[in-house]
Image 1 (cartoon, rainbow, N blue to C red):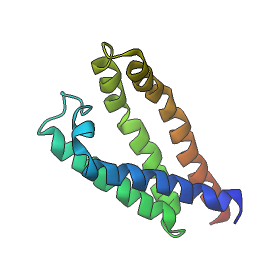
Image 2: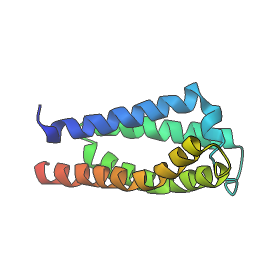
Image 3: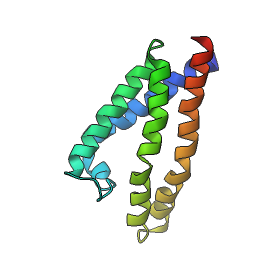
Length: 126
């Protein structure tokens, strides 16, 4: 299996793992839901978990890969405010935790680019 064939499956695995995490340990995700969003944090946690699982399934299937990759790129942009919320909320935590929260911010960029690259590569081969 070539690198271009593995890439969507690796991103699908990452999204599936994160999606399952929203249901296994929802309280850690509830804590980073921006307070400006309406409704209970748990509803947003479960909704984002379902979205991540759906994106993972879409990326795993060649037929839906291009659309799922585009949607994943948009999703990564859309959840960025939660990472900002976490960085703000964790500013008084011990240094390793504060550093982890801050490190999440620039990590969104490669995720967006990764998903975009999958969409672009899929377009070229579709």
